[in-house]
Amino acid sequence: MSYPRHTLPGAAPRPTTQWTVRHRHAHKPQQVARPTRAVNIQWLDGSGNVQEAARLAPAIPLVEEMFTAFARGSILPTPQGPVAIEDLMVGDTVETCTGPATLAWIGRMTLLPGGSDERSPSRLFRIAADTFGLGRPMPDLMLGVGGRVLNRSGQAHASHGASALLQSVSTLVDGENVIQLRPVSPVTLFHIGFEDHRTLLANGVEVESMHPGPLSQNRIDPAQLAQLLALLPHVSQFSELGRLAFPREEASASFA
Image 1 (cartoon, rainbow, N blue to C red):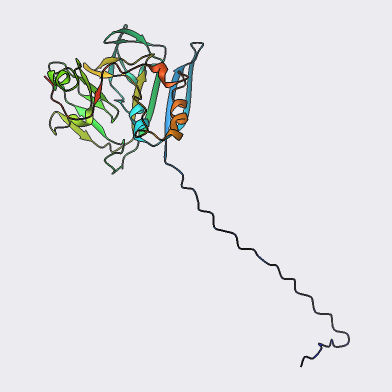
Image 2: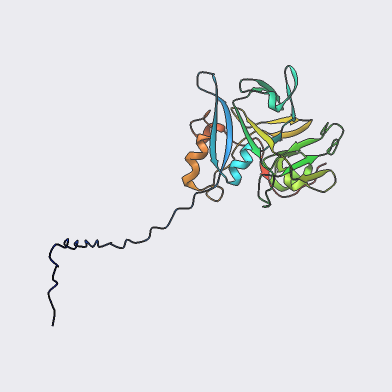
């Protein structure tokens, strides 16, 4: 049996409670942001004007190689004499091993200490003076993970049928003449590019200019190709960079 509620005379009526029905929605998984690295690029536009921009680039090995070849203080030859890489600008002429060429692109990345991953770009490699012969290098040459040295030994022809091979500096580490270092303070690294792929001397050692190399799917996610091309505004497509001047090899080889 139920009894009706009675309101006492003179009492305020009880408020009516309003109930809201909440609908349960399916949980949407949060997207994990991909890591990025801050880079700076300088290039010549189609009118020959110098342009410069700061970008966020995907933190993938290929991008890191494109920006971390030469440490600050590396000396490159120009028609006016030796110049430190940090003093060069796009539009300047550099004496390459196949003749003078105009700088079309310069990339720069600052490496922070503390990386523990062996694949981290926060590694430097010091090549001691005279490692490859008198004045090769002179003085010591400091390269990053993107640095490649041209190996003209007989092994290049034996293994690839080529007159020389571009070898990653990381494969040359012997703990004596070529030493891996981890910086204890921020270090700025550079790479430089021309209209085509070339080799040039850095502190007397023949090294390569910037080139992304073959863009196979095992090197870069196809979805990141547009981001990669945006880092090279001096070209409209990768094919404009031409072919590699020499084949690359990551495996260790000896210098004659």
